[in-house]
Length: 252
Image 1 (cartoon, helix red, strand yellow):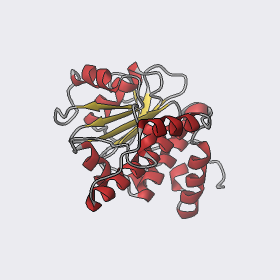
Image 2 (tube, helix red, strand yellow):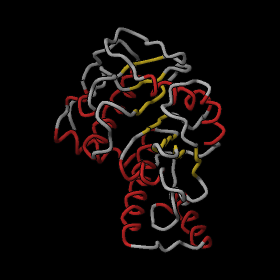
Image 3 (cartoon, one colour):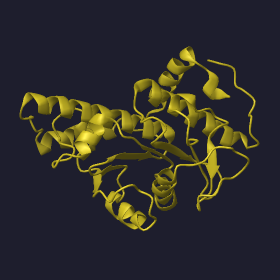
């Protein structure tokens, strides 16, 4: 593991840890191809600060994001601190409403990967036809497409449609995945991405086999028996080691 770097921005130790984990998350997503040029967003609340969260600097590829380049913004969209990069309005508008209103929305990701967008654009949405999708049965919200998410009034409907779920599929658009920790968000997204990839491939082969409700119940019961407060941490740490072997500049 690379040596811990001294923070390049003035912040608490807790915020610096959050910055490094978020920067690592951006690099992992970039490595896996789960990003859209300089667009899309992953955000994390700043520990101990009301309404403040960290977001990617608008204009950088995800593979270029570092801990110190992340932009800190408050609940009104104002930048906190001296950072030269702008913030994508769509990223603030969408993510701020979840951070403000949902306790479990500590970390949030929104992407435009082809397979997740394909599922969001299909009439049936996410189907219970594979190992991964069955994890999400009954735990996904849907929100009808209203155009680019830059108008604050859409926030009310976003909150209504996500409910207490951690996954919201924006129809004709893409997914939003959130978690109590960055580790949980990462692993939930990993499984959702896999579920969508398999669904798209299965659709190309013909009719999918739907899993019966009683089997899904057993599947989710056994899933719940494995859940801990550190759900996803081992996965996240493993992928962090992977990107460290490629490039450690994200830590700076």
